[in-house]
Amino acid sequence: MGFVDHQTLRSGTPLTASDYIWLAALGAAERGPITLDSIASAVESLAGCLWQPVFEVIADNVDEMAKGGFLDEQDGRIMLTPPGRFCLAQLLARPVHAPLSAFGQVGVRLKMAFLDLLPKPSRQRQIQALIVAYECEIASRSTRCGAWPLSGMLGRGWLDHQMDTLEDSLHLLRKSARMEET
Image 1 (cartoon, rainbow, N blue to C red):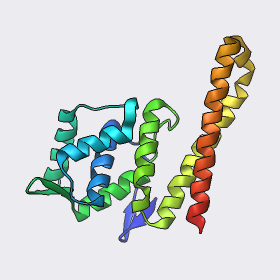
Image 2 (image 1 turned 135 degrees about the horizontal axis):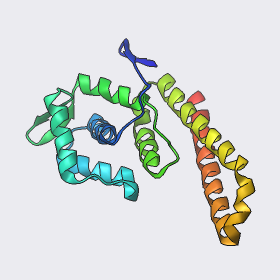
Image 3 (image 1 turned 90 degrees about the vertical axis):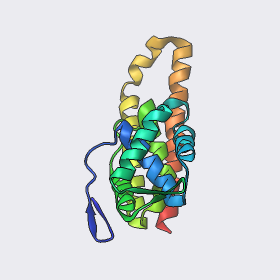
Image 4 (image 1 turned 135 degrees about the vertical axis):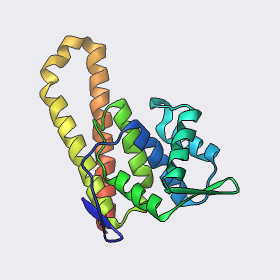
């Protein structure tokens, strides 16, 4: 839990697919007025090849955000409202379910893309939560190493590669955490 503008942020429920769209749209709109096409491009570029909602789903979510007062559209330009800013902070405070799964990686990418929009203490908490998730996953996978020889030489090489990738990501998160301390 954190605070933005003296309002409590609840952060227990993991992010969902719709939340990812909201996070991308609200975060992109926080950076400046944006078009619907640019929001769709933001979702596509941030999610990469891991997850790709169709344009109509993105448009429906943006319409829902506008009807809810989170976004305001004027002359084809979409802007963030104060309730949208608070909603963005709430989304950034929520955990990513299974952050090391392919779908979870989308959530991690989105959070990292917009964490700079949060106050420093909130950024630090979110980075620390990701560090803990990565450390737990690495520890869990390391305890299962005994089964790796069963996968053969090529399989073992691939699993080693995945562990190296996790270690690299953890290193980057720790570096980000150190940068936030200064």
